[in-house]
Image 1 (spheres, helix red, strand yellow):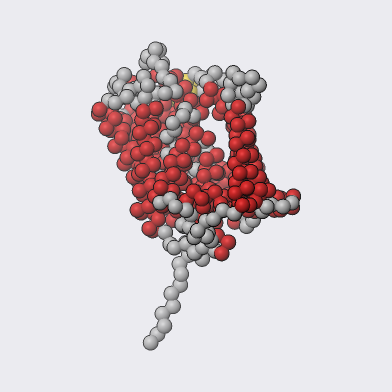
Image 2: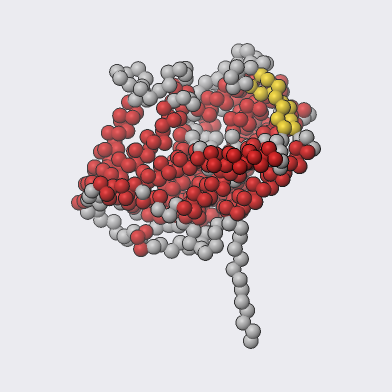
Length: 514
């Protein structure tokens, strides 16, 4: 009998796919520029705060000047790619927490007797709440999500997929007023005042819907993770160094290490928190007093948080890991301390290659202006459509989903889209409800687009824990996120429609209608 030989099909490696996407973008920009594809719209000037008529046209990179741009900016763009520097700094802190044994001990303690779905729910809930710290949440929660499941004797890929899905789909949800919320609200008010000079809002305008949606989405995303995603993933084979004892019995050294780390971490946190509280003796040193709102004092572009929060978190992790290592005797000298700092950077070569390819693709796509032109064009469609009421709100939601695939910078998109607020007000829709609709729609598909800078973090960690001989392709990474995006879109849209019909308040002093 003839022996059949099968050849394992290997998909296109993520790096190769990013290079292909870069090439396609270059060709597409040339074609679109040849046909003079552009859009004209009103947007708010970030300098004066006034409206200005702006025309965005596709820029051709399929030209001598375009190719010069690519060759002259690729290196500097990679060096300045925020994802790279933030990731390396955070990995220093995570490395020492792992190497000292702090994370293994604390996670094993928390998850040993906890039910699987409770651990998943806790991770997802924390990821959604973590939107308060902005994009830094991806750098912190994706690797910690992997370790949470790894030390809980489950497939770390589940933790990576669930944490990234929660961070993207829950990007619009926050119990607290964030810097993005403040910026978007200012744009909303500027446009609303064209119709009603007395219109106002507060930081509590969305508190009711936020509480409800955070709870609903935590349960929904947990259900998707446990009942669909976890069952689709291959079995994870634990290495010897990854194994966890069936019965956790803390030794005296481990207990002392935990006491040292929790004590040192608490002191650090108290000092830090005191310095972001205004009005107390010698307090508030880390606030930007050029701003009026407290949230802007914390998260404005010139604030300590915006410029130094990554390092603050990294130092916190180092303190936890080092103090545990000293107490548990797992770090005995300065050489072991330095080795522990670099532990998570071992074997990071492939990750750096992926980040380089991603930074080049994102730079090329951004320079082509395709995303900006699309946002402007869809905004014009809304402005000129004959829809009113609920159909117009649904259109805004759907367009927000599409826009985020090509322009994941939510503030940039909303600066343009907020121009439709006067039209929505003229048909009786509250500007705050319009802002909420856009914000929810824009978070649905963030996890599906490689144009989003933090998609590469998700992809890199999937590959880092991949035990197959085949690389995890971009399409596979997207397929893992697809059920989350689809169900999130259904939940958000249903929520918007129901809220529009019953006219329930959004928060304190804010409703659906005017």
